[in-house]
Image (cartoon, rainbow, N blue to C red; front, side, top):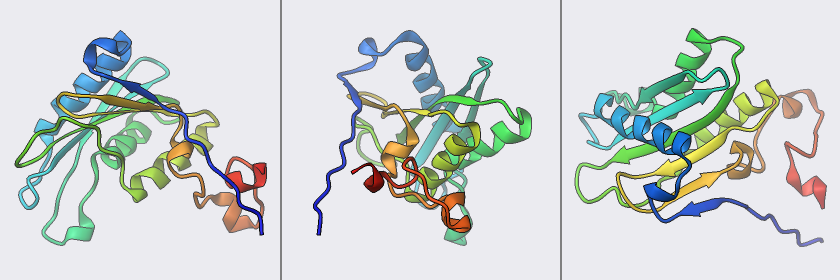
Length: 174
């Protein structure tokens, strides 16, 4: 048996003032997108904003459904809009924010497992990392340089075809 370790490198900012201007602007768009959420059941509103390499920004918000598995997360709404409106254009970064029904949005939240898997798929498709900016309405902000870091043992096309690479399975990096 070998005991291996994973390390996650990320940036932590105390607040908006520390963010680079382009990342602050993208996070603001995600915060604004929470107002477009359809969340009559949970009242938990999530907004996502994606900056493409061509400079365009696409937003999405969570869309709930009475049949709960049929709902869509903000990240996947925005990602679907990107491929529909700008096919073949790479994603530079995604910002994710939220607004709960009660309490404060004073800390970052992380994408769910399905959204992590979807973000990794887009990274592999475009063959470049997607920067992830996580922040609430106020408080600290976390920036992860690539989606793959949030889901190091992701399921990919390589698994379907029986081929593996170190980007898909970091344990092979030793």
